[in-house]
Length: 618
Ligand SMILES: [Zn+2]
Image (cartoon, rainbow, N blue to C red):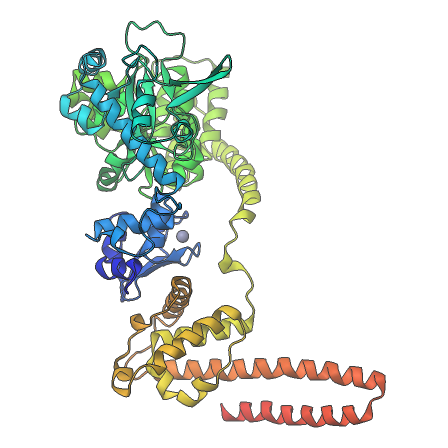
């Protein structure tokens, strides 16, 4: 029976799929792009249509289309496979092992159950918004400028205060009636429990509030942000959010991202706003590349997630003190990741939601006119202000510190010149300061680089490299196996991973008749284990790159290379055995075992002859 993995791979074009996330350009028979998983300026991320894999030569990340979906969307293997299957028009439930049966009762894994609860909860809140009690919330949305279709698109809702008996458990009751256990409902985060006397009681967390569901990147609800309605005199905060759960990680989620995703790619940027309503209204008026953090400051985690989709981050925070601080912090974090940062400057106390509601064109214009972060801080510092000499000096110090962190050299020199004009200090002097500042930044960056050591940089040993090269050459030029059939049948690989790969390769080749042998291509190799297949294709693409410039017409160069590797591997293996032999001789000498010594010396001579023969042959 065919596996779902095979069918998904057959039906999905990896180049097309990855192109949905980043720009790929043809490079020989492969495609190349900037790696979404590490910082880089020259592309070392390769996608091979023939081999159905991707591989980054910079950070060594690689795999097949499922691995890519896992990494890119932050999914588990099964989730990624399911998503791709559905995209390809396949029904995962028809395949063995893909039915929701991770648990013996057939209800699915913990995560699957939670996803179902969150979906049911979202539906419940959506329906409640249409009820009589929900009218207050509905009116609130409309008063903020939302259209009914926007309310639907973002699946906004309302959480009822009470059930029919007057208890604050409307949601809890509903979920229970659908067969979810109290423990499962608690775990979803929308309900909490408390002790009353001897009994355990439950209470809906968001009751009486307007509900903004928060979605993961695939558009599945994972949590909620609940806003108090106008006139409500609750003692709790304006917003109540889902606490950390298995699905809800506020430190990495971005509100609106599932809808913004295609636009971020199209516009080549993401706009970061402060609140949920800002995002909703922004989308409503056509600024669709907007997202917001979920009640936390912008973090490294957010930026690392976003950089897979775009290299430009536009910050649009309130112009008040807190907003300016958040802008500075956000910009510095993004610079560390070598992202291009822009700012949309807003006046103190302005809500993007209000601008978008009152004057959609104005918000669209503003969104198009983002400026550089330094430009923004220069304006803050120097516009409409007369400064004393001391003030200028301290401003210059602060701005130089910021300039030092900008990744772009062009931008740096531009702003040093500008600063020199503003504070009337010679450019040279400022450049000196900048150099000193940069030196200290570079030092602190260098201390962190150790952690970025990739497997590529690890010393793998000459023998492993030879073995890898031999297998990689056969993957790319299968004909060579038959050209050098005798040598290839006798080659012995010692590193365990190459050994297992080779075992399957041989099995595959042996199963072919002469006619199909002629036509076998590099993408044809099939493996029983997906892990081995991925390992093998990694090797294949590595060697393909190394052989990139050789002539493929007659395979002469490739054959020479293969022979060279075979000879050298043979010699390495013989030398190793010789070392063992020499050690045995030493022991025998110590023990005075003459018979054994004689035998060992004979063996050693034979060995030396073999090594010599091997050398003469090549
Ligand atoms: Zn990479």
